[in-house]
Image 1 (cartoon, rainbow, N blue to C red):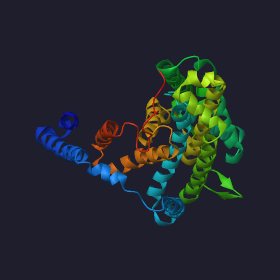
Image 2 (image 1 turned 60 degrees about the vertical axis):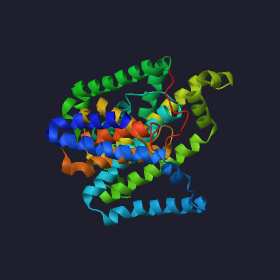
Image 3 (image 1 turned 135 degrees about the horizontal axis):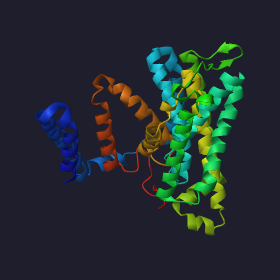
Length: 365
């Protein structure tokens, strides 16, 4: 029954674009594909494939990670500027996904206004650079710190709420920030945005060229992964996971849940600020249109796709949702339709995400 419903859903979505005949072909194609998957599951072929173990997994992992790092370092030497630009945006969204993963994935606090902290980081650098003449490196800790402070100030009253109510508060905060940026003409230039933002430079060498900027983003993403992994395995990270699983039990074990949730908000939004300054320095222009509610939903979709609470899942989710629309650019009219169908299929067959755990991945109500 499930394959029929999924196939019918996809065909109905496709119907307005190509007509009844094409929708019928899509229905039959998806139904055959899903039926084949179902048969393979029943015959335990997929389980047999999953049971195959790669010998010397430790050595394989030790080889894979350096190989990936070397590949990413070599990309600017092999790819055209367009592809490098897409990879840079993938890196910026990776920082955003890693930051939101701390709040939602590690601690279980649903945040629907994460783009607001992204905007605070971007506009802080834009204002510091254009009005006070501060450079990128001086502004980097200030922008990230402002975003973290904003996250902390929001969390102090908002953490009195839980579940859907907390999500609504963060959603409202995101819209408030966007509207303030849109209407405070004397400071932010309103909907026209801020132009003339300087790219970063190092020892007198401008990093504004795409290949050099790529390495800057790559190093900051690598630094973020290392730091977040260490925090995740520390006492703070274990406290976050305990709070996500059962806040009452965590509190009864002596964990100050309020304090650790404040840590999560501040630490997660810190990386949003870093992503914001990278975005504004790359584009050399910022406007409120870049930080809408849909931006927050996109970032949340990345960590859900990759697997809540998984660092590498957040990275994979960010790359998929940035790269896939570019790959499907030739079928621009249908790319969001294809992406939507793909996400629905993933949620049906892999509801915890690509690298999500089997248990314990949920929001507290």
